[in-house]
Length: 177
Image 1 (spheres, rainbow, N blue to C red):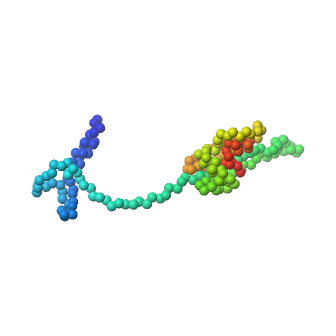
Image 2: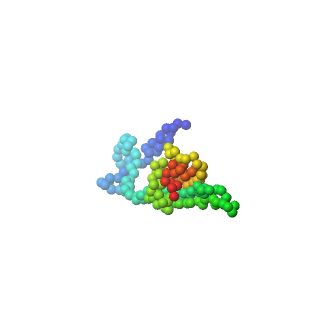
């Protein structure tokens, strides 16, 4: 198939269409050449003249930046002792703590929302990051979860850290509540 055929066909159609021209001195629009005078052989004179449309201004609503709302949950660390009490009962498992972090502007019920939003912005929404902080090698696990959106992008994060020192070093103020 010849790739120039559609363009050639379009050009032929435009040249074959009667020219519509109007000027203030002509009165009503005249339809192309007639038998009342000589015809022009200029191809541009055969191209249809389209009317000029008035300019239209369409109001555009301002685009609000996609917000950040993340539900954060921390479970742990375990109670200070897991040894049974004298009556044989064991200490209860830690209850999960949950807060909501909102950014742009910082808010929600996170106690350090400004710092947590700054930490997320610095890592482009990544919750976990590398850290050079040295933590004690004490296994006292902390489980964390984050669900929501950061600047319109979905966030789903869950991880267990060895202790609160490792959690704070790797997540900054995000889970500091």
